[in-house]
Length: 187
Image (cartoon, rainbow, N blue to C red):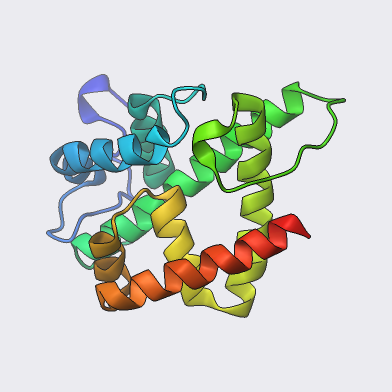
């Protein structure tokens, strides 16, 4: 494939945006929004992590480009897919970091992101990912709220749009999910 054809170039299974545009054009148009989401997501790490906003957006793009073919119904669906991709990128990075750190002692997990170091962040992300999987089995919407808010970095309004619920429902679900996750992480 030539460099001018881009990632989705002439690939027969090119993903498309809501308007039918190829993924690279859709992401190009949504790039600033994805950067803002990624920046909000990484801001909680206090710069301690090894993943920059640009790297998160680029790796999210690659995840979106590599995913199975299909079309996004609208902006909310695109944000939902992007938040899932960001979760995968963040968790994959945490797994890589944890693999490099073999032999360390386990640490207590808190949901206070600002005070965590890079090592603690990797452990928090991995433990939260496992707890989130269990939460999603119990209540899928609570899992999606956490995925959008924590891993996707979406605002309450964006999360409500993605899930097709009210902002107030997202607020209630976010509080409930955090309590359940905190209990799961402390046990």
